Length: 85
Image 1: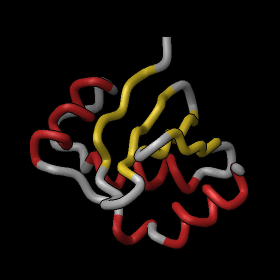
Image 2 (image 1 turned 135 degrees about the vertical axis):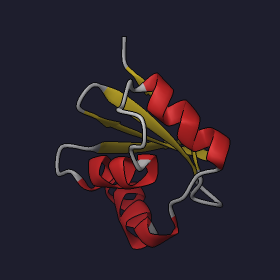
Image 3 (image 1 turned 90 degrees about the vertical axis):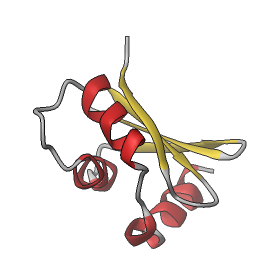
Image 4 (image 1 turned 120 degrees about the horizontal axis):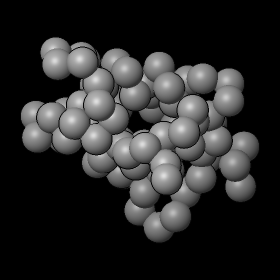
């Protein structure tokens, strides 16, 4: 259910993080400027009112502004982000 999923992600927004390699992957996949704080960027996108969050298995999928951010549902680690085709 999207409402519960959204509430769960928002309740844990302060836990969202990524690994150093994950941060590099996000910057590369989204073609962000070098030095961009990828976690802050993703959190801003996730908090957007137009963000649609679903859960499939162990991951949340946050779709907003033509990108999908994949977040592990247990650790709240951003796995990857990519532009939608």
